[in-house]
Image (cartoon, rainbow, N blue to C red; front, side, top):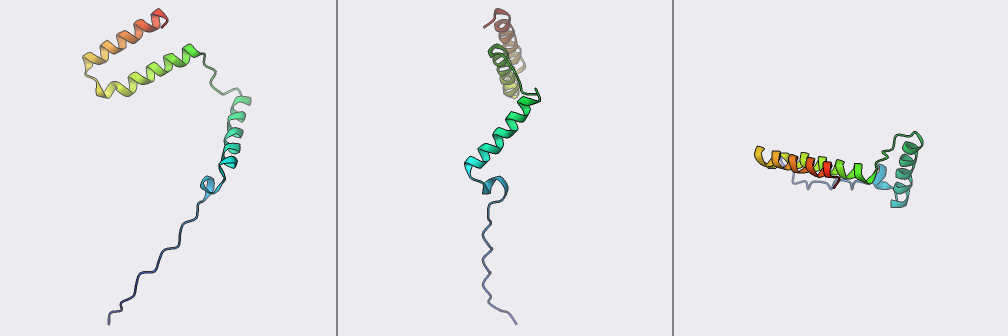
Length: 87
């Protein structure tokens, strides 16, 4: 014998963890992590030049798969020259 039961509604999910916190509370917790890293001396302390060089290096890595070998070699050469010239 078949019954024509309607499916019951699933209970609504309530946010858990960080999703349940106010933005101010999440910001407070995040700042504690940043302060603890700085207190232990593990925070990155880069100069502006070092940060720029790292950004260039990261940019070449992310573009590598989209370039041919010749284009990649030319890009690496150009970046190396810029770094030598202090740009």
